[in-house]
Image (cartoon, rainbow, N blue to C red):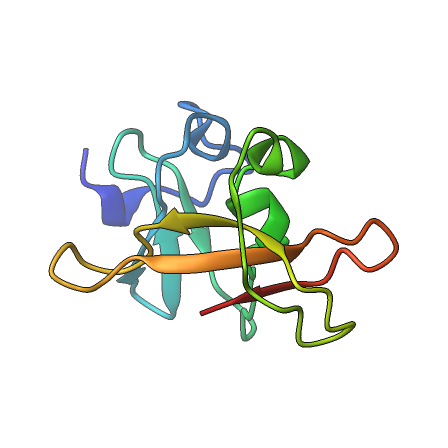
Amino acid sequence: MDRTDLLPSTECSCSARRVGNVLVVEEGQRCYRFACNTCPYVHNITRKVNNRKYPKLKEVDDVLGGSAAWENVDSTAEPCPKCEHPRAYFMQIQTRSADEPMTTFYKCCSLQCGHRWRD
């Protein structure tokens, strides 16, 4: 049996949406359609389909390991640009390729300020 002879089904028998299979777009006899490469599922496209998903951006603190990342870090004589406190905690992380220098992240030692910046 040829796939072009099948009538559109209402549900993919291999549950493509649940197992992560991608439905491909192919040209049918009268219109374009979605088709599953695993089972004979086809669905005619009768109107414009537009669906965009954007990834949820993480906070910078989450990427750096959260508040636990700042436990047991060293401090240095780096003045805070916000409150001018004379010391700041720091940590260095490789954020770019290995041939680039490490990025230094700072956090103000003042409990009232806690400003964070990078060098």
